[in-house]
Image (cartoon, rainbow, N blue to C red; front, side, top):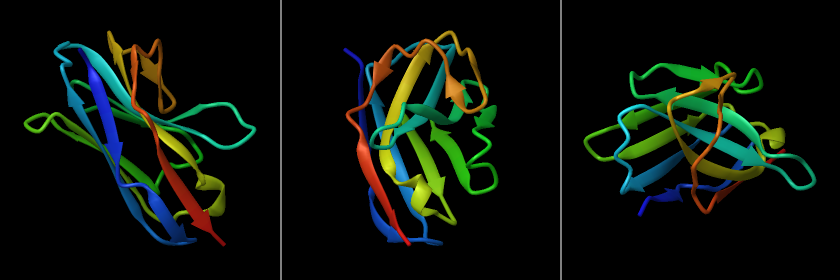
Length: 124
């Protein structure tokens, strides 16, 4: 059974930094896309950053240069380092995993598994 468990959300002032982690268990696919999505109140869920099994990365335009996605395969953990945070980054952030590794623009397609989400709040 695949489980994705996020941690590291919280509240920060604009310009600050936060790091998110996603511990994955039970996921054994050799070809994959793993990524971070976010959903703000009243808005659709959007892809933020994605990474594949080769370590290639992709970002949404809104976070390029500020967010960094990475993975530690020895720990089965996905990370998202968020710097220069803005109030518009406020959202619930979700970890996601998709078989096959299809992705673009910071979005993994055909997500098979979701984490429960962690809240990020950025105050002005």
